[in-house]
Length: 484
Ligand code: ATP
Image 1: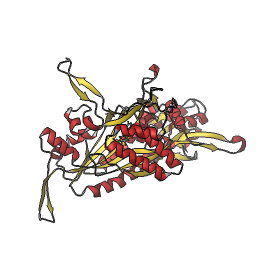
Image 2: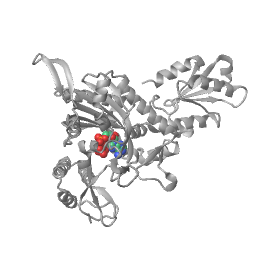
Image 3: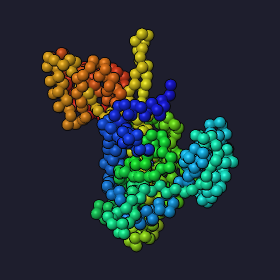
Image 4: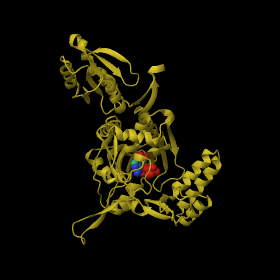
């Protein structure tokens, strides 16, 4: 049977990957905590992303900007005026929905029933109405399509209203002095406002990039599908500053590079696809999503956008500070330097939590092993060893005769390089199962022979095959497997 999202949620909780936030108070909707294994997996994902973006690209450097920013930042970026989702309430169930998602759901149903043309026509009509901010039109379309509330079963809909997704709070202790600031809804703006700081202090030449990993906050109207859509989440973004006119070249190149990354972390090619945006945001001249096939369908994990000079120009206009770059490369057309311009930006933006969920769903494996009477179900996480929370677990066969001490020596020799743990309790079979469930790629068994010849048995997670290897080779063997 196919893996359901419920299986994933249950496994994530049971084995210390993801817990609902403040669970003893019955949780907080669309907010989650990472547990002891989840934090390791998520940190590993962030590390491989950071390395892929900065260490492997001389011309990309990182920053870590604050979550709070000057309120004018969000005026310039357009978030104050247009970071909205259209919402609609059902009067009978008192449930709130995103009007665009209701229509998209209907279009998906048409497409699933084979009526692609009707699906497309509906999406186009919705795009047109939203583009014109014709909210009554959107409501009429929902009713005309016969869309009912899944809870109450009625179409007793309210009007459609625009809902701003930014969270706001107050700075300043005295009410009169306080002013409203926002929790950043994306990390990108921290990069834009630091563009010249980094360019000047780092003596960066266009094209160059600035990468950042950090929390972002959105008051999502409908929060569903586990960590796919959260109100507090983490983004891994990179803004690449290029000479105007060269942006499509860079857009296409980052499109390829980023897809290759998702394959490298273990997501299979057939579960990944590009989805070009038909309707472009106000700041973009090209945009594509990389989608992954979750148990609930193909959904965006990363966006790649050609943002033109929209952001830097808006910041220049509002701050009255020039956001220009002087390009002293010679333009072959004129024989003179390109001179001053506001760079264009190509951005890659991936959610750490969505990527986590994709990788976790993909790794979750249930299979039947053995034959006849011996047949049983086996569950394991087929994680790339570089991502696994624990790289190796060392098992002394018995808790006596010097085997635990020998195992301890092996753990000590490896643990400055990799996360290695000791597992002494229960029968060997149970210990293997426990490690399978959290995706540990190697289990190392220490037995009586080890005391004689300094060899151990390595058991491989995916194949369950075992091999005898000298202790002296462990570091190199594990090191090779966990590198990416
Ligand atoms: P969606 O259409 O799914 O709301 P978006 O197009 O608004 O996403 P972007 O603003 O392009 O998303 O953000 C870039 C990335 O940040 C997304 O590809 C996604 O991985 C991640 N992301 C955005 N919103 C959330 C969220 N609420 N929870 C988790 N990750 C998110």
